[in-house]
Length: 157
Image (tube, rainbow, N blue to C red):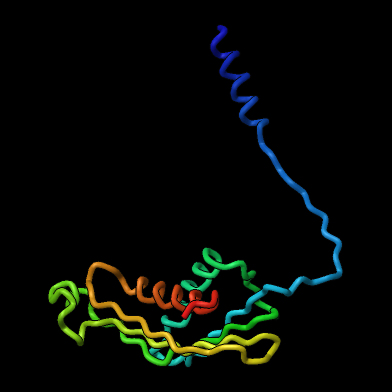
């Protein structure tokens, strides 16, 4: 008889242990000092259909992990514009089978990047990333390119 009552009390405590939060925001200012807007200028033809969004996702992850930039979609103090000039997917199976020796199986990505501060060009560079081994997927190609772009943003090279 005591056990069902104890179970019922435990269930009541667990159910009542929910939490919540409520926020009321009243502001009329915008902090844009370290906001960054990413802009993909890659053509929307079939050759680059998936490469632009894949690089955008890798850039977002790398920027959030390694910088203090706040990503914005509207407008920001900085704009990072990029255009994929070349993307060759290659063949992962052939890279794995030939241990990276076959040049035609290699994945390659070439990106041209420009950084603007309030509409004024402050830096530009070209990034080339390639993948010869078959152990990693093409996602590693975009991640390495994004990490290289972020390294440039942080003042590297």
